[in-house]
Structure formats: structure tokens, C-alpha cells
Length: 298
Ligand SMILES: [Zn+2]
Image (cartoon, rainbow, N blue to C red; front, side, top):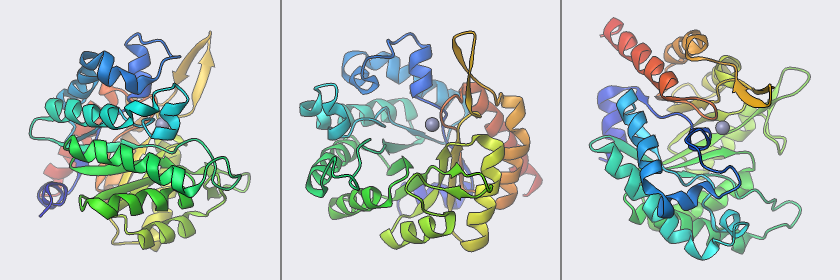
């Protein structure tokens, strides 16, 4: 059995990690540079973030490769380094993880198929180099995260399935419209989006970024209602960012996520972590709540 499924069978719930991007910026990197080039140029900084999440209690951490698709790296003239940036990202997280697991982070390319900004074969090559690098670097599974375009995502999943059988986790981002309903940027409802995703053959699906821990409860309830036995991942951001005296502040502090995390546990979510604005402290809080939950439900 694959390591991820084995751990899930033993532990039932896995704690993942928090933000990478906002943590790298906090560690003093210039926000204009490509965060993924640090894998090659400042691996210690990347390693320290991975390590701080392991120390906070993560069972599974990601890689510093969210923006390391060939298409995205091209905007920094780094596309010729796509493979090595991803392979190194995987190796750094594996080293920090020890016996914990690593999911290879893959984000959207930032361009649209719909408007012909990119075409399918460019996207295939872009995904291939990134996924090949992550797999060769030793990741235990792939995490397609913050996606909003199911056509783009299906191309990524197909490329992965062509040459690897490690598990595929897919996490979408939803926006709330004025009627209080949730849709992807491309207009898919929750039900429609997850129906599609499961058809593509994703093993674990869920939601990240977007709306903060508390609003995300609603999305998970809707998913659970339609797909009761599906294994889920949730990694919300720490609320919506607000600009306070020229600094970006995330409003959901670790104390403010407790009720939401308890709801996720009630709903039977399999992997719980955070996205933008979450820190080591958020992960420590989630770790504590998961352990309490486990003791109560023995
Ligand atoms: Zn995010």
C-alpha cells in the first residue's frame, strides 16, 4: 500500500502544514523574487520552514514548488530550471520530514486556456517537467492546490497518471457570490466541480485558500452531503488579508480557528492544515485539537 493511504488508515486524520509564501516573505526575502528559486539559491531558508512545520506537529508537509510550473517560472526567465527547482524542492522537504510524508505542491499556471493565453500542449509540457521533478525528488503524493479551472487541472492529472501511480490530492478554491453560494472562478458550483474532479481520478479532494477557516465549514458541509464517503483535505487561509498601517494582516489568529477545526473533525475530514497567513502557531493549535479528538474517540 502507498505510504499516504497506510498513514491515513492508521491515523485517520493527518495534520498538514501552514503557509509557505507568507512565511518566506516574513523570513526576509524580497517579495519581487521568485520564491521557488530559493530551493537552489537559499535552501536553508526553505528547509527551516519545512522543519518548523514538522516541529509544530505536521504529519505531512508540502514542497516550495507552488509556482514552479514551467509557464510560471518563465515570467522570471527561469523556465529552463523547471525540473531541477522541483526536484530540489522535493528533496528539501523530504530531508526535513524524516519519517513524515511529503506532498508535491503544484499551483495553477496563472494563464487561461479559455482565452488562448496558453494551449494544451504548452500546459502539458509545463506540468510534465514540474511533476517529473517532484516525483524524482521523492514526494509521497501530489497536491494540486488553489485550482479554479477544471480543464487545466484535468490536463495536470492526466500527465501525472501517465508516469506515476502515487496518490493525487486536488484542492480547489471557491468564491462566495452575493447570494451566499460558492463558485470557482470559472463558474463551477461545488457539486459540479467535485463530480468532475472525481471523474478525473483524484484520490483525495478538498478546498484551500479562499475564505478563511470559519466560512470554509459551509463548503465542506456541502461536499460531505453530496459525497459522504469521499476522503477530504482542507487548508484554508487565516481569514481574508487586511491592510493595516501598510502591513498585510490575516485576521484568523490560532484562537479563532478552534471551532472551525472542531467542525472539520466532526465532518470527518482526513487532512487538515492551512494556507496563506497560517503559521507554525496555527499548526500547533490544529495538532492539539486533532490529538484531543483522537483521545475522546478512542
Ligand atoms: Zn492561500
